[in-house]
Length: 286
Image 1: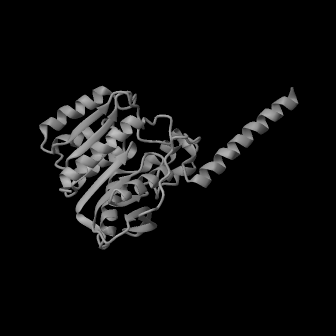
Image 2: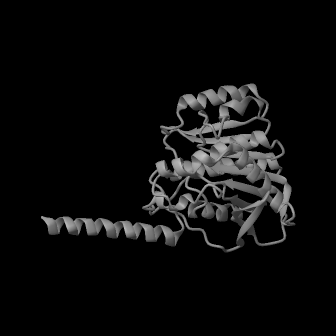
Image 3: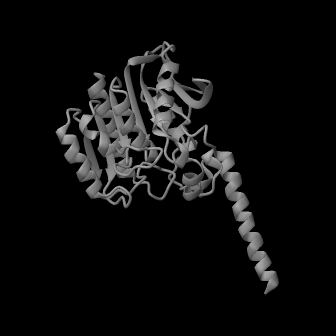
């Protein structure tokens, strides 16, 4: 019986070591392992990638930048990462959008608080890192990101856009309120209600005064962002002048765009991507 227990313990240890090694090798956050077979991997054909450091006051934060080959200038798309940080999925999403003709940059918005890609689960990520990240810091970092690429001749700063996923989706709503000069925002299943000491405002709190057109893309089976939350947001948006709107995919769950997770819904993800493209082109005159 003791030998059997030792074998089981050893087997569990080996599996854990395999998961850790796989996460480190592929660049995915440890908390999202194992990776689903549906995970998309985008090559570098026709695009150029670079890891950069963005000055923010006395600090510097890392970011991943991907630009189409050619002279440009290209419309700009800033990407706000999900709760798992700037891991491989977000980097791959950057490459996908660069292939669509965008100057893409994704800043690491948790950098000062810690590296969430090495944490084992969501509760640990929330407690050790996310709970310490303020809206003021995030807005400032995104401001600095746009200022950083302004000097790049390939960036068309008259056509700036921002997209975010989950935690980054909420960030999009709040940043669109902070910076009315951007052309559009696209929020994939970003929380709409609920505040905290570091984020004293929710998306519903800024909805009526919003002037930037934001497209919200949500899943009807999402247990975290409910139909009631969406209805509340839509009612407030109707009172404003931003022309923002929300699209709900009834059969999709939270994280439906995350192709590396079980929540991935290819149909909803494809349709949402089409709607996002239409939205950006419409409001940027492309």
